Image 1 (cartoon, rainbow, N blue to C red):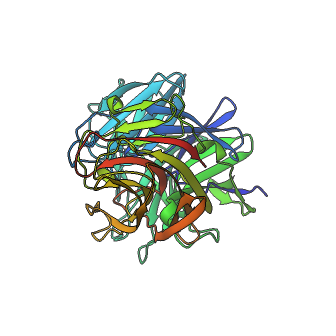
Image 2 (image 1 turned 180 degrees about the vertical axis):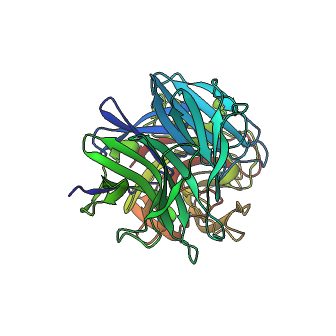
Image 3 (image 1 turned 45 degrees about the vertical axis):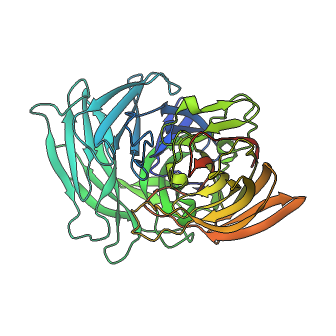
Length: 477
């Protein structure tokens, strides 16, 4: 009996292939840049960062965090990764530009060539079959559309039809399509929810031809005893150890956590195995950094960066060029993933070049954040803890300035720590004063304003006057 593999990290919407002895997984990266992160594993148990597909998407004002514009919870969603006739393909829809992008390369390290596919294809999957290419996409109503030879638009007069419909589901209709041709038949995997309450369920529909009827239903309604939110949406892959379905589970503040469930084919249907649950090794996806002359690939910017405002010289130097209401609008914030069940980060911040109203901080970064850092106020340096509890709807980004829950005088250089406990979804902030002194704790929540799990972030924010600079050194995980 094979183990069920549990990732314990926010890696949403996974799509997976096996190529040349390795598994490659791509995940949604939304408003983080560079984007289109691809992970690699030899055995599904230990994962490493492998590459990013793009540095930026369109460079729109919102993607660059100009003024009060932003793309939180938007950007790149639910990518598909395929290998066909010597070329790797990545495609996704972008929920702020309302466009669909396709990237191709002969090496997963790039370079990647991009084109647009005319139309907007929600949660699309790609299928290459008998010299033709197709996209399958949609929510509730699932479409199959044939593409032209250049993969830039629907083929004129080509196949274009609705293949599955999930009517009357007030929670979530079918989406997250993944289509494959296996042993001459066409298998379509999707997520939807139970109709009476929110719970992820995986469904599968099968057809003998692309113009035939797709027949099927639910195949996986199980939380594996982890938490009662179901597990669904992702790809299937065959490797040396057999077949796996890699789906994810809503896991509150840490985000959407993948689970790789082994299965056997039995009469054309997956028969899932129920081995022990084993946690994957994700240590290569986070880590310490001294920013001596750059930053490691485990970091991503929150929105597209302005490289003129930053430099790496024995630390990460950020200078502001605008006044922002809160950390969500601060440019050049960098983040890396947290992991469960518990993790911590420590950083030293030099604030000698702050202006009044500036805050330089480490945060547990999501809609309901907690931060610990240094603020300049009336010409004096203050060690502070700020928190935010969003009051609007689940999609609404908070414009609140944050609540100061701790403040004390300090020197111009401080060291702070944040510990995240995802068993209780709390972030606890500390200030080093000889020993680390607890400043307070704050409840974290997964919301659709960010649509991502909590991350550790380093931010420089000006609330009164632009032009201040902060330096971050000795980041320790």
